[in-house]
Image (cartoon, rainbow, N blue to C red; front, side, top):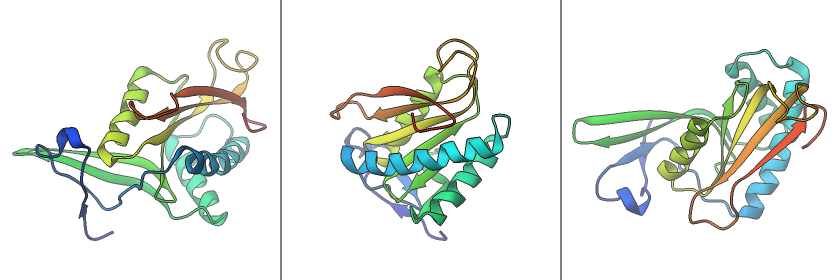
Length: 179
């Protein structure tokens, strides 16, 4: 990870803003993403079952990454920097997890997902020029939006980049099984 690769950004910023990252996320099709995600979620549920709902995001991220690597779902890259620059401006973003160089995961330890979280994931998809990503939340539900209202649970948002087939969808599941 010593060198940075410059890869072609999405067409809307091609001539305006160079984007650099040590990792290029290859665009996975819907089926490939779903296969990766099914395996990732099994380990995400296992992680939450083991640690409960009160840990910091970094604990879930590191545990999930270790589980995925042990299961052969690598490479699993953590906190991957992506820098967008224009003239004297530069902004570096950090992607929580990239799995198999094909799937971006943004982890949150919040009560519920917010529009800002969705926008953050969409920004990462655009910056990387890929199509599918997922928000995962490790926390207790504060209202009846989750399973059985208030039980320990898990919420996810699968996001497909606008203009891609298959719209985003939410799913809720208990920490005891795949949702």
